[in-house]
Image (cartoon, rainbow, N blue to C red; front, top):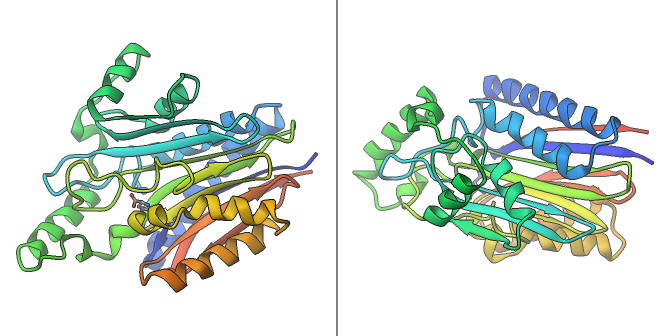
Length: 292
Ligand SMILES: NC(=O)C[C@H](N)C(=O)O
């Protein structure tokens, strides 16, 4: 049985020096996930651990390093799906939690699919999560990005169009384990300067992530478009119709390009242990590992 894991760390217009750092972070996370798979762990365990590593890496826009809302707060989204059970767990607008993906995994084991804001916080308390301070999640880089965005917003109505950083750094993982089961996970701080309460594609099943018995997908990009176009589910359907992971990735990103000028990317794993990636932004940070 082929074990496989793929990671992304966001797509966009990413400077050379940041690409190197980002690719390294993806590679480290892929190694963590691969070790779990090799030791007989499940795809869900592998994608959770890989995404946690990315959330803890301050270079990515998820967990520590998340971007700020227009009011200077951090509201994070995360989602996870297990392919063979179609179980879903997602969290939107969560504050002061270091690893939203782990909270999403707790939701996956509950009778619910998606919890938001205050209720998500109550759930986290009940599940024994510890809360951190805003300063524990906030990095100097995101503070600077936000200040720049705020300054520009004062002169434009297109608040979210003020920086190339806006599409960077959402993180995700897809994996297939030794039991032939697939899982997908995505975690993000969203887009910079977003309206309080704004929810993107990342915690929405079929949009920013999806997994079934054929494929697992994690997306990154302009969440509004990934949501209205149900991007992740389209990829799963293409694989279900016989496309390979790579063919499905290419096909759906090409479709995205016909529907919107906004850009993004995605990663896929299929039930044969193939991985695929595609993006139509300038670049995407990613890594993939297989173990025969
Ligand atoms: N960086 C990203 O991928 C952003 C995320 N898709 C969102 O719209 O919230």
